[in-house]
Amino acid sequence: MTTTDYIGIAAGICTSVSLLPQLIKLIKEKNARDLSIIYLVVLLVGLALWVWYGVRQEDIPIIVTNTVAVLLNVAILVVGIRYKQQQ
Amino acid sequence: MTTTDYIGIAAGICTSVSLLPQLIKLIKEKNARDLSIIYLVVLLVGLALWVWYGVRQEDIPIIVTNTVAVLLNVAILVVGIRYKQQQ
Image (cartoon, rainbow over all chains, first blue to last red; front, side, top):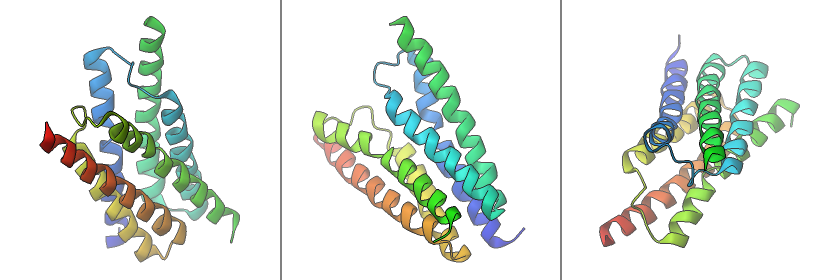
């Protein structure tokens, strides 16, 4: 692994981890009132495009970290839509 | 520009645009109660690292879109901290 790989992985960890507070808040408060589904879908499309971009560039840090971010974002969407339906 | 460049730019537009609702909500409601400064700082560090990564990889889509995201995030931080101090 090169220094550049490490920078990419650190970058991806920070931008993925920053999705966690939203998921934790959602599960704690069981309330999706403030959640914007459109925002989440736009973010999901963007993250999926980054994965596709990473595959085409054969860029492992981009693929790995954005896949994690996609999974976190899908979790937020699934939990958020379920809570919204209950309201 | 290659197809890969277009995918990267589309990816970056989506992930940057997804920061906008938070800035708009903040300015509209003039309330930073729900804003997590730690989350914003982690995200800012991540975005800045992506810019650094893009520079090392000479990857224009990554540099351009993450620079826009850094600026949006700094705006959210500046407005957010100002509102927090007023509360």
